[in-house]
Length: 179
Image (tube, rainbow, N blue to C red; front, side, top):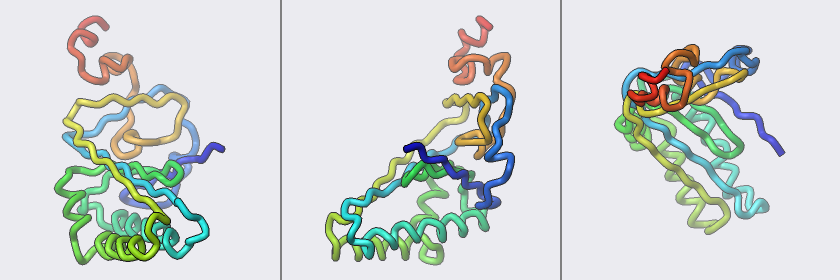
């Protein structure tokens, strides 16, 4: 079964027409400076223990709403892919500050998850991965797609000239010289 990804923008959690209708072009993503890719997901191991996994499921929209209302917290954008959320952050400092701040939604939700996980051991799993990306050390291309992924967190530009190939988008000097 194919699940459609939902785009999360820092300015709005609403999906706009430009995010759902395809753009008839070949585009590359650009984002100024370093950034962080944060991937988080959860897995329901025991569906019948709703009290263990439903709070995890319900906590994320509150956090995303808060992050959308406060772009200074550092979330650049992201999207869901099933039970996985892919986010783009300005820095690990922004990500960690949000995760540890008592006045924000994440820390209370994390504490509640840990309490529930102890009571219903093994009912729900949670995971995340964090990647630091140096400026220009990535490549992304979108063909006949709506704004998606890094292209939704950053900006889309024509995938032409040095951006024609993956090597060129990565800034490979030889690939740029050969084009």
